[in-house]
Length: 318
Image (cartoon, rainbow, N blue to C red; front, side, top):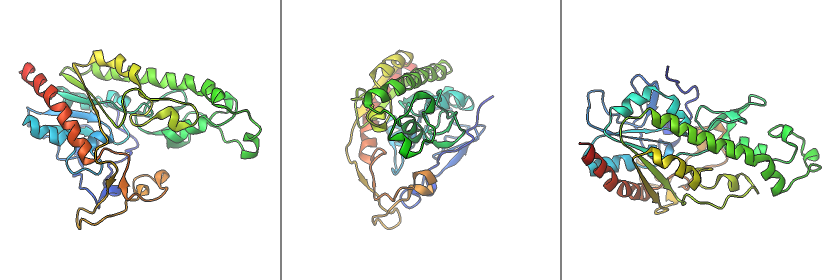
């Protein structure tokens, strides 16, 4: 039986209403809402895009799945889902039929932080439940707290600041404590891809879409050093492990148009977006620019990067 997300992290519409209308709609039989318009049940010729917010297209009127659809002359089913990782799509078996009825699947490389592990359970989403105390929080906070000074058995536990100052702390000590967890997450991330791809019978294009290359200078000085830019925690070795499971691999590394000024779709004037309208735990101030998600220009680069490979695969499959 397919799992249905118990916490729908975001359709982003409440947060982004002033900037974009995502035309959110529920996908029949899946119990999940995605960006519309959705391909109808009667459509027998379409391709699908699977991914997180970058595929969904936050703050973008025409994300790369839509632009690619124009170039291929084929309708698209955009299954971008906020905060999702490969575990989420491996578990949502109700989506597998939609994917296998498509002509082609573009599978975005998603974050490693959205992967269940011995520190937290997340169902493949970025909002997690910590095993040690059952608390709910973002994955970044969970791992950041696990990196705080203290012996391993206290990782993630609340320790008064006056006591933390007495505990040994160094990047070497943090690495010794956290590196096994990072390796565990990476191995589980690869395994989630194996589970997902084992259930797909159509050609799959693995798609790296980021501001960085697959290599990054990881450090254990803070959580940002462990994560790197999106897709957090993912490195070349992980890509090399799953590339052979897919028919093709495409990279798009771009920062064009970022940061993106946020403007009202009604007036064209600059606006501020409050992330707390999406999730209360993210409410640390308003945004005047989109600095995290791909800009419209980056989506153009993504579609251009994918067009030739997808067209060739479609032609061969026909």
